[in-house]
Length: 356
Image (cartoon, rainbow, N blue to C red; front, side, top):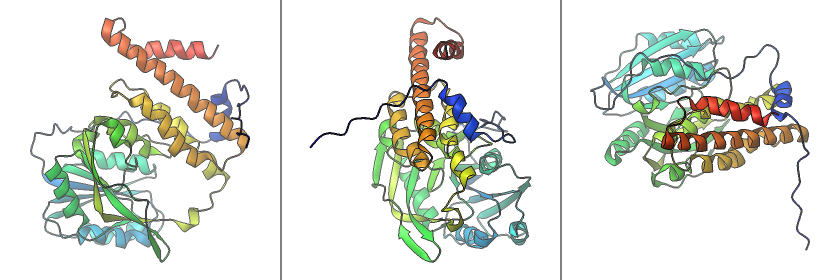
């Protein structure tokens, strides 16, 4: 039996520029990695008012909103909760629903509702981060909901294990049907490469809130969750995957067959990485994990696009990884011999040389 030969991609000049002509509509801005300043940072040693902050961005999710909010409010939990709800320019009945929660007083569960013009999921999460006063932090999408008792169990285990975050198992709900989500092997994960085996979503987890000091979700783009494996995981020493099902993910049936615009926006999964990765506080093994993440995660978003678009995306990602690898190798040299004060300058030199 003959082995299938590997396909050699054609030599395409400036694949990123060609990719941008497909991806960027004229009226859309490029991804922005937010540079706003927090009103406070958490050193991890001061006493914070709340045990846990739950951030819930809301946008036109009136159909699911009652179920989501009551799944938090009805938790039997000994921990003091701060619940931050950020309405992101809803035009359905979401705001009317939220009015009923404005003056609701439940012992141990304080509700804060923020209204803003539509700015996107990442911007809504960032507003929640500014207001966070909890020692621990969770993101909950407003279409989803929590299983009974999940907060008490998860926070208790996070404290007992002295971990950076815990990951819940979850169920996928599609209409009236429910099935278990892909199982994540329960146990303790230590070190960056090990922690990278845990899915990189922002939801289904409870974090130490100080992990997000000076960390923001990139705005004006999809795939803001990429900040979790690329900016939060490198700051973690220990994570715990729990055995219990704590999160119910509501699959939006109306979005199962994406239109052309939705499919093209999947290309942001590559371009947003470039906004996140140009940092110099990355752990050993970081660049080893980057190609693996691209192979198993990003390609899954792109596989239904036209072949030419996939080629451009793959070449763009490959060039980006090569450039980033050079940049981080040079950082190591600079730290050793103290040659350069601004390593970004070196990256720009290399980027210019690559384009010649």
